[in-house]
Length: 359
Image (tube, rainbow, N blue to C red; front, side):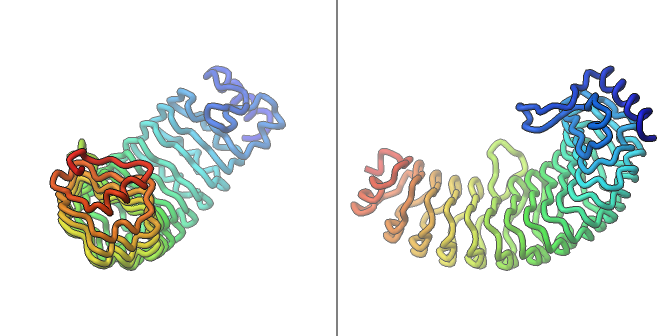
């Protein structure tokens, strides 16, 4: 189905559904709509129909030679089987719809590199996911998944994977096979431990496992040599929370770490090796049970933003005055006593949150 017939059917559909002519939309910073010009229509490589109040998509749309199809933020419940005709498609975004399952034809799209399925109603991921051998980004966030198929871990080119806010209770060892992975988002699940093979993810740069049920970090995290952002904190209003009490000494081997968020846990101490994180610029240890910081804390020479509020700190190591901070929070450490040198150091920091009883 090509040429005039295809053009007329889709033009009539677009008119009937109040789809705009193709134009740049400053709100979404992209072109959106269906062109009414035939030549422009037949040469389309990208179609963006996001935020178009659609409940279904005409099958004629899937006879175009598209590289990118964006259908996010609609009310679509089902994708037609004809989607398998888009054999050169590289990006499919159907996030924020009401899709219950994915037609098997999606997994025939062998050139797909980005698949955005977040905020739907998926309860399982078909095993055929393994067919998408070129996939580099997969977003399954905000669904109802209780597990992941082993076949997922055959996607050797996957670099970004998000399964934020589902119902996962465990992370299968196969995760270690995704050796090209750079970003992993497991936030808001029910995961109790990280598998040993997590250490294979040596290219990982961002790792978010907020609001789960972790009680410890494995020593194998030492092998995540390229990790720059690590978040295992908790949001206070979330029911499922991590309850870490100790950090392994191996955390000091994450020497490329730039941002670390461990707030709202139950951490009672830090290993001396913590001071080896010399590239850290932002550190949040607030609302834990820390009574002291290691002397090595003064080695965090890159640190500019430090939050150690709401702990049980009695003193700070004298070496902390080595830090050139731009922001510091030491509030709600009721028994904290500072030396005169440390009080003078505080006054050099542009933004400081403290308790008046310190003085």
